[in-house]
Image (tube, rainbow, N blue to C red; front, side, top):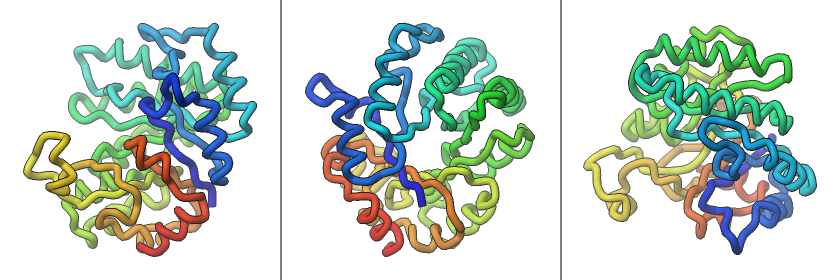
Length: 268
């Protein structure tokens, strides 16, 4: 089973280069990484910065780790007021995927606005990238049903579901049975499974520095540190790429090897 790791923007600093992070991930035997191209300076004002593409491509291919791309989380193709600005950025990410040879773009489904706009936009993006063998994996911001509705209505064979298990657990408000029911709805459409942990609690809403004390919100904990039954979830799938999403740089520095992570997932 392929397992990848998300390289969040805050991990790349003047003391920690992208190349050194990639090398550490390769040593731990992970198969691929997810990168945010806009935070690597590849997109400015909705346009691709062509001169920066080659150095990034050289770094990625030099280490020899496969890579997928991640849209900015601010992209909301349901926003009818600023739709053109969102679409311009999304199109630039699609262009970067083509030029870097990435085969998957992960994007979050919009939170509020017009569903019809989002569906139409994803259809346009999917048609643009299909000749290059690129797919879009649409991630559930929270509700699995809502995101699956978009995937099914886009009706493109290069658009699938990116199931974020932790978001689904929050949507199910910590109810394990509801979580497993929701996961089953998207099993056939899932092209990537995203893992991190939390306690399934959305309320009360608290300051970010208080969230862990309360066990509230999208905490992005290491699997096994919260309440999500990963073993039961993984048994619903035959073989699907898994992506680890840990945002805290300290936690990220101590992630286990690929084999170690698999043991943790199957044990919970």
